[in-house]
Length: 105
Image (cartoon, rainbow, N blue to C red; front, top):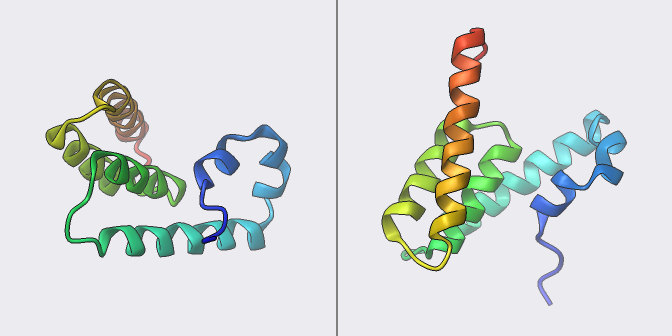
């Protein structure tokens, strides 16, 4: 068994909200995210699902540009997740626009 790798669930689960505020936990999660990004991106051929997962890891480390690029690749590749990918890509772009309008990059 490779262990638990569903960081997206931990990130969204409100029961972890308080611990997310601890600097050590946040550092751990960011390190974990970077390791998963590196592991997945080392593959010579990525599936739509893998590209979507990579985008989610980039969101955890607050790298909207990389998340958008990964999600765009997932959309271009196409597959069973087309609707989810399109919706999540729209959300990332909305979040970027909000940040740009607020002057927060």
